Image 1: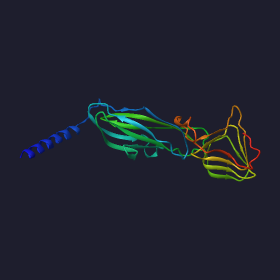
Image 2: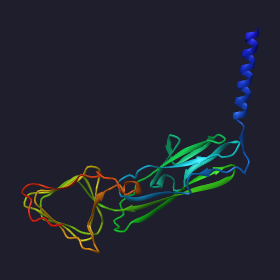
Image 3: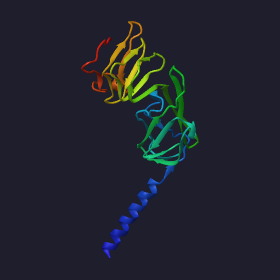
Image 4: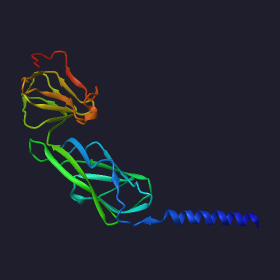
Length: 244
């Protein structure tokens, strides 16, 4: 009998705790806090997805709260994508957030081709509705249209103009007896391990006020001083008349 008595007390205790934990506040004075008011992406090349950013959402109050909705303001047409605590979508409802707890919102963006040479501002926002309060976090990305080369072999004399940047995957190979001319101000971005391979010849005609840029395609601040992001420029035996 004593054993049953203690089991009943324990069960009652858990029941009370469970009831307390399900006591969500509906006070309008309760608002969410965020790790940032804006999620900012550096230049994102068209058709290429961005790196993943994250936002932390905090409930700093002493009460549990239920977030009525989290949604992308641009809805299903938005170039941004969000993931809320492991779930992907554009709208989420009735998300519980315990007292002094937090949740992650992960954000990515993919920019459609625009045929524009200048970077394009891509805005949106994540809207949170809690106890009648509407709060938002801005999403901002810069989209850049590019010429895409993937495992490209140049078999005729070619000029790379300084209009839109060039994005190279795997390699850009200049074949035997072929010349590649790169105009002043041109920008060549190389994906991980991608290379410019020259068997023929290359003339990179940069100028002091219009330099030619060769660099990796990860433009985030974190990568600006990291070595080994792309495979370099290779001048093969027999390659002649090269100019940098």
